[in-house]
Amino acid sequence: MTGPRPILSKITRPNWPTGTTGTAGDDLVLSGKNFGKTPGAVKFGSTQAQVLTWSDTRITLKVPFRPDNRKTALTFPLLGFSSTNAPIISVFDHFMNGNLAFYKPNDGTVWAFSGEKGTSANPCPADSEAYAKDGGGAFTLNGEALYFGTQKCGTMYLQYDDHTGYDYSPHPGNAAMNRGIAILSAGGGTVRIPNQGTDSVYRNPERFNAIAVVHNNGFETWYLHPRKHLKTDGSSAYAGEAIAEIGCAGLKDCNEKKGVGPYHLHFEVRRIEQVEITVTTAVGLTSNSLSFTYNTPVDPYGWRGKTGDPYNKAINDRLW
Ligand SMILES: [Zn+2]
Figure 1 (cartoon, rainbow, N blue to C red):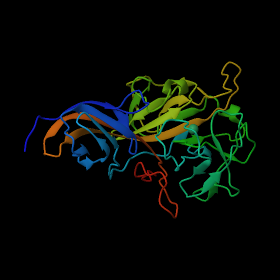
Figure 2 (figure 1 turned 90 degrees about the vertical axis):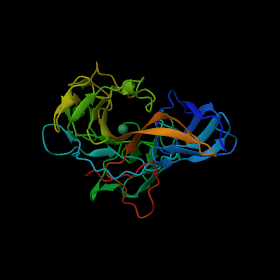
Figure 3 (figure 1 turned 30 degrees about the vertical axis):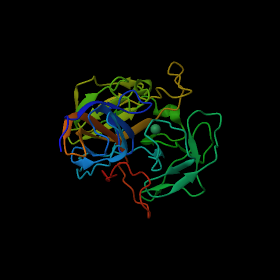
């Protein structure tokens, strides 16, 4: 049995500016023709996707999880001119079960890599960003208690819900002193200044004055809120090189002119992988391919909780 060759013409993500970037678990729509009426198969590279609906011109599916065995050569994110890492004031939230829009409506919980959980109804209703209240016990990292506290919420609240990175503060409790401290690249690579046109995974990346380093191992590191970039787009950076200065760009209550604001570094690691999507019909005819780029925030500290990792969109290898 044969038929006309299927044509894959367009990839879209509902309610998202571009369909060609995303991560596992995202909803995706494939448009084209000659898919047939009987469901066939869709592959991302060699990985088969879960198809939700199938018609002759439209397929909906979930972006499949991709196996990943790569390791990185990143170092700890370095801050300042000493070898001491800055204290962490917020963690990667392992309970992100929606798509990874930044600052999605929160579910009131924050899960640290250790399996510990912070909960709250809504301790900071006046703030547009989400917070989760520490459930009572301190979150720990390598046996050390994490720093808590925001300017809004007192001292026992852990920022933020649906948070895809780690916030570092060299001077926890005195954010103004963080201003201008050098941010050092966590690894060698090429500097990239993200912008909204090419980095739509973030709603408004330029709002945060982000600077990124593209490493040659499939990972990018992102540094948000700097007051100043020290490197330009396309330049190279070595591990430990100063690439920016800590600021509060894009954050509420940030006023650089007055030198006040929630100065800190948001550090994030993203796994980047480009794959080809192909459609194979029920009668075995395969379409052309279209490119899709996985852009997946990962927790560089991995997951050490006793139960399964609630953040199931990527293997969260411990990078260090
Ligand atoms: Zn952050």
